[in-house]
Image (tube, rainbow, N blue to C red; front, top):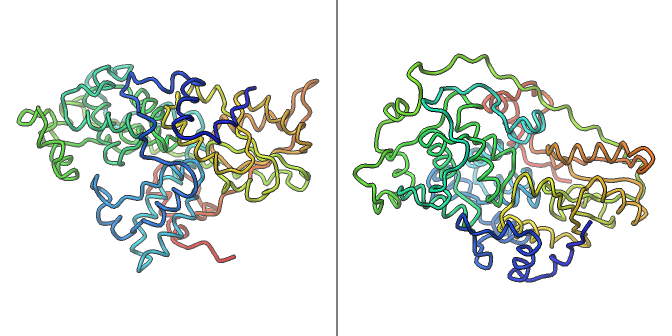
Length: 443
């Protein structure tokens, strides 16, 4: 175990230097890595509330597909639990002149909620196709993201700009993500998992649920058909900013119809026959043993890296611990930008300890040290955290006694009690959309 709590009190520049020393891979600039001192994203509650106050639900509905449109850019704080879906929904309804003006923004929040429910149900299976591809590619998949892509040297102005923006800022507009993923998977023939892992490493809002399931949606392994785009589509929603100066203008490989592009990418036998996809929702986590926990230790996690974590709010005087898990570092290889944003969020959590090591070893020890008799954390779909919690609760014979663990729910975004199938978002939203449009009742 190593105590990294000192990171919380450092300036951004010193924090970046310390993180690069502590985790040398995160500062690697081989992929056009970021200059941390000029990162445009600031973690923490104050920055989140400033962005939340600026949302315009009606403008979002009109312009969200345009890269320069009025999108919220709230995803980094949603991913880390600094904002909740219910909080953003309530703000959207409060700012809209009519509830229907906020409907589009709320339905997009619904996608994030949906991805989380699917992740809770399938766990680590999000890294494998949830169904057979909707269409077969003409050539075998390339195993890794090609070097010219990582170096932003493909010659396509749009693709290279998206790659540079991803590496420099850690954020892309949703359309930019879809275009880059579609081109990589369907035109360059790269395995979607390789692209998804690459994104997850760099995105400040990097979340396995939204990220990997979105890549599956583009690839056609969790959707009715693969997602394709052509130059006309891109030029429409970027106002031609990439196409006009592109060196390939006039002979762009994407300057074709959707039908022609599909014929180049996919086998001639057309869509594959697939049975309807059915995914049973994960049963709700039991309420746990809160009555038996008198002196809780609050476990702050990646999904709740904030003082607004339900666990931190429920027990404001309890000690708090955030554990940087080496398994997470190895699996996701978070960039320096990702780590900087995370640490800035944690710096808002009063009294939190930031420790490096295995949470299954660290948390029972910290509970003993603080005189705590149980562990409390916010509800999460993350299988790594859930498995660690189960191990801690079971204890280790002869070494660690059982330690009660309780998951606390987030403020309700929608009523999922009637949901029996998560196979498609449209079916899910049909069942929960009406309740998602209802503001949180006043206390």
